[in-house]
Length: 507
Image (cartoon, helix red, strand yellow):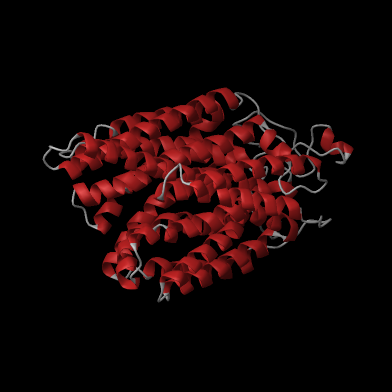
């Protein structure tokens, strides 16, 4: 747990800068390697069928270990969990950059995901406790949410630049330039404080949750490369559902749960997790399909493709800052997230109008600007709501749920939309055998079909936000039956403040 130094008021912003850099590294690493994949494939000689494992290995390790990473931060102190994540991420990145075989590269990506699962929840929980009770909380989460929302597109830009000017290996080496200085600053800036009682780790919960999340991500990834009817796909998804149901049953009965159920049962926090997962499912399709569209149909080079996403990134940063500092207190979280979902629907409908003859300025750019505005309205308020009101000792696992929602949502959405894209291309090809330029037309049809389904995902997100998120209530920590009396009487020991309306900051 974080404790600021005596002269800590100015250092809040130094902590935010440190945490923002770490979060940027984790988020951009999910996309920075995408653009480098063709070059890595030529250098290491692995097959196209195997290529997706460079992405999937990271997603599997990251998504399945996030809850454990968040809990370790709560128990042993977030400073050293944060630093261990930074150092481990740097070592794994160096291993991947030096890889001379496909197996080593995949192993390095899995290690990146594992250490990212330590790093990401530690960063968000440090932010939560650093700005706890501060009037600057909304501004801080606005900045952090902008980084989380825009980091993926920054990864596309940076990946294109490094691949085109240096080597694909620098898409991995660049993490050392970020992680090592960040670890040095973290040692000097943060003070560690672990859980005073050091409860035991919920080993059954850890094993079942990790296995369930692993099989869920693996099942959807396998469906992308094989089919929904493949036996391994069906078995993985079915077993994951059973394991997650068993996990909930165990967590409700154990005295020291990995994930206290009151964290997700709260309407505001549960609604925030759901909207983060759904928006992640939809928006990752934008990065995936528009990247291919701009390179294959518009003829953009990797760097130019990355730069083409820059307007969206700028809009996310601008809108997130305005939403958190100017609009959140006035309108509340529910109104802002539903607005963001509605804007995202408009953006997806804009992308369904793509044709083989469409251009960037008239057809792609408007949708990018709208989706950037929508993501700014969603991510910053949702991140703040998902961690607001939790006890200090649960901040890490609550933060891990944010990253789990985003990562699992993105993985499931990418696999689902990719499968729908492939099916649409196949159907179009078989029914238009006499058309000229059939391959190009079929591909565009696949893109627009995927964007229609992404529209449906955001419609579900809009309905969830409108029906689940409360209009006027802020989530508060729900004490366990053994909690002290003063925590049950409306004052949480972690904050020393009574609950305040949702969307308001404590003065």
